Image 1 (cartoon, rainbow, N blue to C red):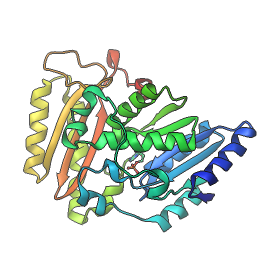
Image 2 (cartoon, protein in one colour; image 1 turned 90 degrees about the vertical axis):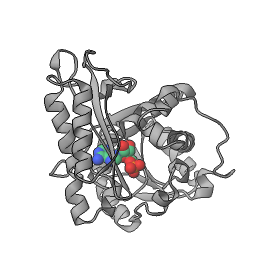
Image 3 (cartoon, rainbow, N blue to C red; image 1 turned 180 degrees about the vertical axis):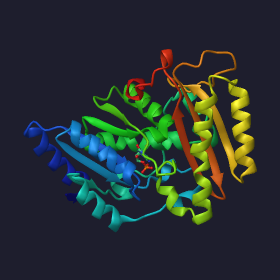
Image 4 (cartoon, rainbow, N blue to C red; image 1 turned 60 degrees about the horizontal axis):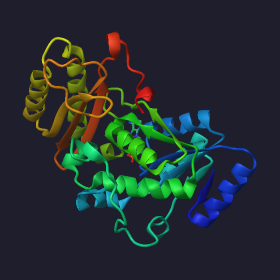
Amino acid sequence: MIVLKTTKDIDYWIGEVKKNGGSIGLVPTMGALHAGHLALIGKSRELCTHTVTSIFVNPTQFNNPEDFEKYPVTLERDIFELEKSGADVLFLPSLETVYPSGIRPSKHYDLGNLETKLEGKFRPGHFQGVCQVVEKFLNIVKPDCLFLGQKDYQQCLVLKKLISMLSYPVKAVLCPTFREPDGLAMSSRNLRLNNSQRHLAAEVYKSLQYIRTNFNYLPSSILKSNVRLELEKKGFRVDYVDIADLKNLDTIPDGQSKINTIALIAVFIDDIRLIDNILLTGEKGNEIDISASL
Ligand code: AMP
């Protein structure tokens, strides 16, 4: 694996790959890599001849400066894992490489309702920062495929919208959420949990499973308030518990057909924020082909 840090270096490498008829898969990350990230790399290697993984902790997507400062950085270990993963390039740009004219946004992305609900509501400005950095990365790396994790499902919908707004010739590929044995969704922020917080964190997935088990029998509003109360009782601060339409994340009101839905949760344990989601069922009770929703 080679490490490239500048636009000039990666431009040269892309030129060589494309000259030889290759295709490029991009796995954008903020580092502190775990098996979920590595699975995205595995998928990229399956679908593309070459894989670029980027590590860049993007300041513009943090609505909370303390969260940015405390974001885990484990670069040496990441490089070790990437070497084993079969990724061809680690793109490790500086702040100046990504934002040569500074981090102030030069435009506003019209994300419609996606910006005012769930993550958009609780993290104002977050998705503008995500779009800002992903547009930069698409222009620098020029990937054929972009690999994204279902754990950040709303982000996947936002990026799908970005790609269509930019008419960018890239295919977004959605990959399932990787979990710890007790169900906790893998996340770089899990590194910040102490033992008792780590134990408690597994309750988030249990709550999602409770919703999935009961959603055919109880109204959404009851399921959501049961879960919220239970999580609060256990010591979580709850940003949201929602059951929403897979296509646009509109809340499913009681009594409305619950096909193609997703349950989503965001909570804090102290100052550590965790998000997760679970697919409910598709039409006729089938499992949903999540890749079809992008
Ligand atoms: P991050 O480094 O957290 O910005 O995540 C980089 C990419 O990895 C995003 O597309 C995430 O959705 C994805 N990702 C993060 N956690 C997981 C997970 N547990 N399973 C699968 N993909 C994940």
